[in-house]
Length: 123
Image (cartoon, rainbow, N blue to C red; front, side, top):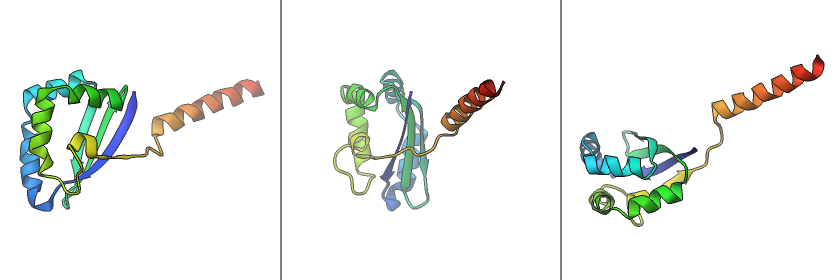
């Protein structure tokens, strides 16, 4: 699974509306996201409107493609677009993907593998 983190900017005057809409996402939209491979998907919002999203997926490109093929996604993106600043296109296509530079479990696994090799060589 690939971990994906992204950011968008919610208009400060629309933050309450953004929260309200996400408190009751359409069931059809939830099902479409899950079916398209958007797993462990979370959104985090700062008081100034900075939105950080996180998801895990086999392929972001394929997950986006599958969502783009659904009518519910077209309707949702159309309704949500007005809530964002500096957005070219739909929110799910216009977000800024952030580079992952650290993951605890990956480094622990590398350390464990190193320690196993080092201890095996000293015996």
